[in-house]
Length: 161
Image 1 (cartoon, rainbow, N blue to C red):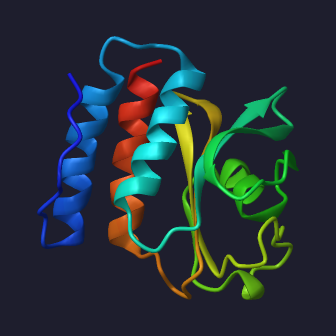
Image 2 (image 1 turned 45 degrees about the horizontal axis):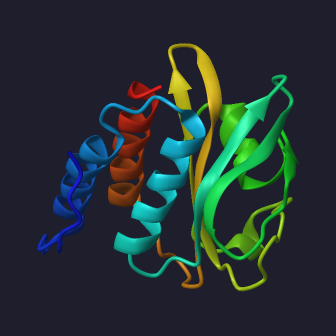
Image 3 (image 1 turned 45 degrees about the vertical axis):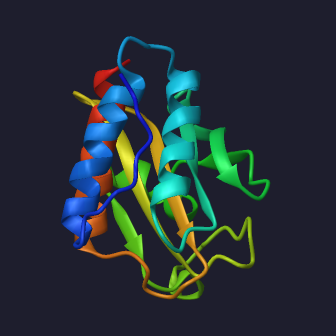
């Protein structure tokens, strides 16, 4: 069962461990992808500092990502695989950290206020289901600890489908 609570983790890895535990409780007993993505987005946006967007894109027909539930300003609806940070993460089947989006070739600017980005693919076996996309107004907001933490949250999300 989910219970919202203060997270007292003094380190980033501890914060993500607590978030994973909270997410497991939040998604317990629910297997609807849209409902779970909506609650996951809300959890990330509420508890992770310095975000201006947190959400999902889901892969359709193996060739484009379509906007899913999110928190933040309105976003781009469709992104081709291989395009932008989200499409690159799908093409690589790997997470992508972008310290400064202005330095990323082909970056798609849905919100001009975003300065850094972390995109983590949703993997189920060999299948890519989509991505979790986090944007920040701060340069270099994301690091390998964020990557590992969000990859764990993506595993929790996919396990509930």
